[in-house]
Every structure is written in structure tokens, then in C-alpha cells.
Image (cartoon, one colour):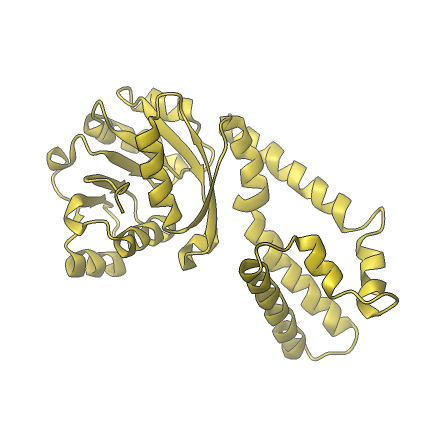
Length: 273
């Protein structure tokens, strides 16, 4: 792809960083153009780098001035890492951050040469290429840099751009934390199945498969609104309608989810400072 960078430094290659790296290589990013800085590299990462030719922990001097510097470290590690990273930032370097809670101002304050910064919030389905990432650019990000960031983020799923960085907190509340809500739904569905007499293993198998299949249907039938998909499986006066009367009551799922999202957004704002 033409938007892929000619030089990239990935700082931190844990679960999310590693998933991104594999996605980039699958897209066609030249391995020799990539350097990974991770002093705690695991065996899987070492093997991947050895097999592909990606440089692992080369001398920092050889990494200076990349087109893109990806920050995939834990947010609490930024202060310690910043002195070593700051000299790597060149005048044309785009900073792409997946650090939760670290604002564009936080990053600019610790990497003084940084001008173009994209703050993102991916989610854990990125590990299987089905994530969605919210992204917010700083004013200095050029159209070309935005296209390059979009190409890299698209390697792990869909990308949604927001022009106001403050909306990243809302993105965090909906999609960043969202997989946990879905997993909890599976737990609750299985527990409810047990309560009406199903063996625990059977209830969990039914719950997991139902959510897996429903998600796949949403994915494959993207043109059909979720509300219509719901209506498609709801016969008037039937069993689904009886359950939805409970879930869609004034004190049902919608207000509960609204409170949950609001709580997550408030906490994201607190963590962002």
C-alpha cells in the first residue's frame, strides 16, 4: 500500500503492539523498514523479528528520525521512557500513540520535538484483526500523515476519526471498554440459562455461540441496522418479544448501558487529567 511508511519505530510490542506489527507485515510493510524497541521482548516477538528481518532493539542512533514513531508502551512507562525517545523524534516524525489516558499535550510535553501526533484508542479484538480504533489528530498532522496512520491502524480492524480529542474519552467508554461489556453479557446469559435449568456447561456453550454468531451476522450484514436485525428475529407475541419487553422497559437495558458508558467516560477523563 502506498500509504505505508518507509521507516517506522515501534516502542513496545506487547499484545496490542505485537498484533499491530503482525498486521503491518501482512499488509506489506517492508520488514527492513521497521525497528522494534522493547527491552522485555518475549520469545514470540524475538522469533517473529528473526524470521522476518525486523530489527529488534538496534542502537537508538540508528532509529532516529523515522516517518512514524508508534508508542505502544504502558501509559505509566512514558515518563521513564521519554528521555531515550525524545532524541528519536525528527522534524517530520509522526507520533502514533495507543497509550490509554495520555493526551496529545502529555506526549508533546515529554517529546519536545514532536509536532504531528495522533492519539488513538484501539480495542482488544485487534488481536484477531477485528478491532476498531478511534483516532484524533493534532493540528500539525498532514493529510499524508493521516493517511499513513489510517493505513497502519486499519491493519487491526476499522478506524473512526474524531476531530476533537476530547471525544476519545467517549470512544474509550464505548469501544475501548466495550469488549468487556460483551463478555459480561455472555456471563449473564449463561447464568440466566442455568437459573432456568440448563447445565452450566451447556448454558455457557449456548451463550458464547449465540454472541459469536450474532456478532458475525452484524459483521457480514453491515448494511442492515442493528434494530432491523433485532426485529428480524422477533415474532409478535413470541418468546423473543417476551424477553425484549423486559430488556426494553423504561428501567431496562438502555438506561443501564447509558449509566455504564457515562461512568466509563468520567473515569477516562479522570485518567487523562
